Length: 220
Image (cartoon, rainbow, N blue to C red):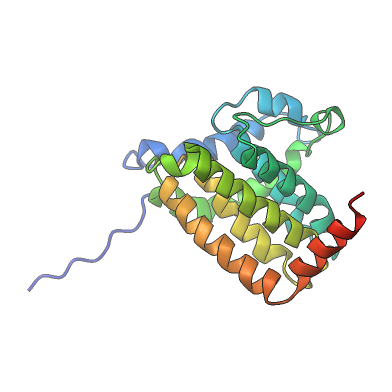
């Protein structure tokens, strides 16, 4: 009896690579072209993107979570992730940024560095993902649920929970890839992982309940 070995994913540059697999990589490559010291303004980036705008904004929001400095990563990433979550929860079709944020953004060299780190994982991820189950991305209730999860995950990321920045960052990348690649199946997986993380790190540890209580106590 002949056994068949599962084929390895093709090289990203191979002609056998499916067309959908280049989208995230293409966006990152495009952002990496130019002066590495140039600061990319968020307002300009969002203006050039359409369906991928929320995915790209979330990607940029996730970047600081990989800074290996305790306290800084969550303080930067958490509020930005929450901003994306609130807008999806409210049903906005395109991101809105306050002026002070629209004029700011990462340096191009940060995008280039992160793109290199993601190069190998993207080879696998982009081979598996494809546009499908788009109701999980576009339906009003689905978008609101995604926003709710991002809002809570951003709040947890902002809390001083030790040794969780990388874990939250990796989880949020699932949402990023789902939005950029228009993959509803991956979004369903992100929902499950996100809800499980909220239960484990939020409700069971008491951090989320305490944070919500403090917010309510400050409410006028």
